Image (cartoon, rainbow, N blue to C red):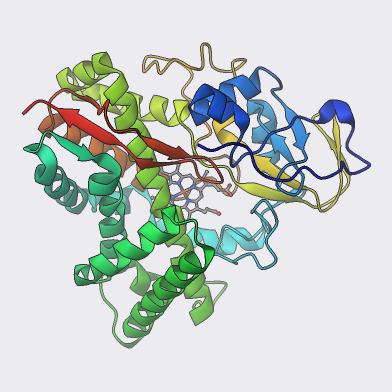
Length: 405
Ligand code: HEM
């Protein structure tokens, strides 16, 4: 985490000074001061739990209150998904269906709802477990590893490739492109990696158009969009979204979880002794370390949560802060797996609620189970610092761990 560096422009006329908080969601000083992004958000929540305006990153609103976030996530007439990135980009992508608003959104989303239904996802468990154990076994006898580089990053890449029917021989290429997209600060390198991924996926789509296999791409090619099959560009739009939505997120979900357990040896012991507690741990740790921050574009002048929004304002749904809202979750900083209120918003709410949540939970359950079964009591390596970043998806860049062998 670095110091705050972005420029502070003037306030627009409709923004009242009492609704302004200086907050840089990429690099906020609270993150640096607290030495941790989520602890920085607890600090932010002590200043406001509702909605506020920040002049940073081009100027935008931030919703950090839990109730207001639910309201905004459901009100797609006011809060559109046609623009989601802050600061604004000239040409935002058009991934399907995340950039679409209802009613068109549902036409495209329902295909994925079927593909990622619990029954379909359950058939992937064996493959996921095998891939996870291979990676964990490769580090177990060493007594140390960088969990991100050696487990959390390769695993979802392999699962994605299997799901899309991309041969695993191409793993080294895909992994390199993913590494560049997730952690490089070089925009040109990221664009180039994205282009290479798009080309690889376009090639798979073309191959499957010639001859179908048992994979998601083949299923998408034949799916029904209002009485017709999707066009080539629509197929690419689906694949691009599945790539960005299903890799980075699972990587970070796993890394925040394994990091928490490294710091909470008592919880490690409890989960090892009783596997049936793992689903509760998954939900509570997703709440404690929620990491997605989607943006929205305001579609009309409206009063919302006591502030005046103007058409074309940008709003960030600060889900990680809403899940630390002390009015909804008692002692929000505590990861308490016996907590009664489990209604976190880590997957968002409303029409865009994560369509991959069953798969995400399965991947998380497998990693909790296999990691705890194969690695003895472990902790963060005191000699090697972790690295974490904020932004639209909070991420763990390095997580050095060690254990006795
Ligand atoms: C722990 C892991 C994950 C988290 C925390 C997560 C979180 C989210 C969130 C917050 C959204 C809503 C975005 C918005 O409102 O604009 C979302 C949407 C979505 N997610 Fe996930 N996600 C995860 C894993 C996955 C996986 C594994 C997949 C599939 C491979 C996936 C596919 C999607 C898709 C397709 C959407 C768009 C849904 C729509 O617009 O209707 N996600 N995810």
